Length: 593
Image 1 (tube, helix red, strand yellow):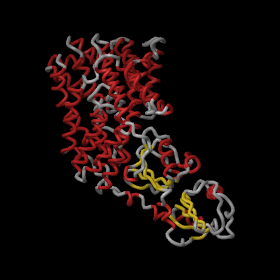
Image 2 (spheres, helix red, strand yellow):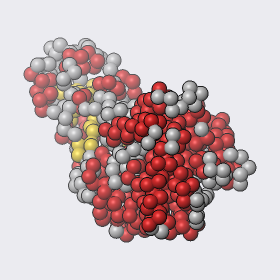
Image 3 (cartoon, one colour):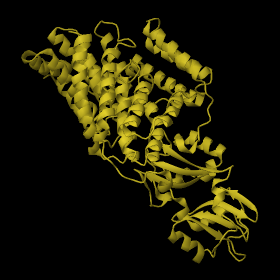
């Protein structure tokens, strides 16, 4: 090997190790690798940031904006409303949920489709008295195979289309992936619906929402005596007196015939007031013994005001884009900034018994929030959390399904008919969605998954360095040995399986960028068309079914499903084998050598 080849392999090996280690996020790792290939002279100063202007990067950003527009218009939400009619049979529930997420993921961001359908799946599981774990993993895997159907279904397809253009052929079109991807998606749906869901682990937890959040067990009624030192002071001052170590939430105040749910921090406490507080026995003892307050019996049912018409409780789930991730309730100060109370947190099907003020939120946590309808809607939108279906709380966005679908369909038609390049047509459609109000201006940038954009922009120069140094050709020579002894179908299957394994430990976009040059070099060595080999890389890169770190969809369902790292292969391994069995003959038929 030459010195340049040694250097690119060392850099790529270090990059893969850091990807697997997970201590640094993948976008930071890719930038570090990019600077290293520049430092050793594998790319010039003028080439370092060319990847950020790559058509695939622009298209991914545009598709993410369009996905947000479709979500805001209520396209997926309208589909999910139909799920309430499917009944309680697990096979039908799995088939319906997985089928809808496959359909949506073929034309929009798969994580976005999953994030909106996941709360519905949790609700359906609870209504049926089952653990959400039997629905969530099939839903996540369905979002992955749905992306195989179209050019815009998943970033690897866009990347592979761009690499095909470098071979001298036109890039893959909008529906060039459909003959193979649709076949794999249908086979995957049938398998998951009939028997695959039976392989998912059963994480038995409290199924119903009433069992999950029994807040009445934690609510106490406290009266303010005339001699209490807190009388005449505000709730904020009461909280300061309690200190950060106490986990007490004032959920309501009763003053004579007046009921004040979710009172303001600046509400003055008067002698004779009754506070409804959420606290455990230790903190309740502190309120009585150290603060001089008294337990009280309300006239009537004080707890009934928790369900008053102007105040309500709502369950919401934390999405990957939420600002709550790795924050505590004290960091967020929900009462002050949003006028809502956090009453409880559930993780992996169980209510957390640890102190809320010390709990750091993770993706998939289910929150029980209290506040007015208006404040809850505003808070969930700002915090990027999704309300659960059974509470009937929506983000109150007007339905504009027809214009949204029209704009999106027009962009697809322009790209499919080769009237405009895909990056131009989709970015134009994204701009139109902003102009007509389907995507507010502030959401245009927040809807873009910037770590993915940085990853793609940084990895493209690495992929080209692998090709220019001859590293891709060197790896392709090893595959050529296989092709000399076995029929081409074995080579395609081996390339697809290798890409799948890589995609299970690194981001699928990174896997596609690294494997595409190898596929092209292999095609040159075999003196055949690169199309079937590139298609096998596209399929393999998008089918990360074995680990939770292979794709955001897998990670998103891990906490609410109660899954462990080793659970994914139970359904993922047979689904991976089925994908190869289905995809290879379809590739050989529709994209022959």
